Length: 74
Image 1 (cartoon, one colour):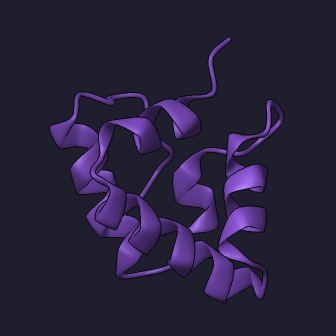
Image 2 (spheres, rainbow, N blue to C red):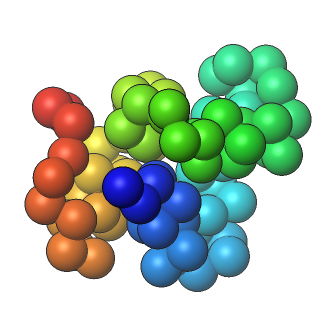
């Protein structure tokens, strides 16, 4: 099964991807590279599970705009 987090992050522009990963990295006190490794792992939770507000809701809206309907509860 494809990693939907990785797939979604490949569809957004580089600035948006960086902002999402920076938010996760800051929340978990890890590097952006470590955040990406975590969310792109085969056993990763849904991307929204790693985010806090207001980034979570903003990312949910982006996911829906890009056609990702299977989303975690927001």
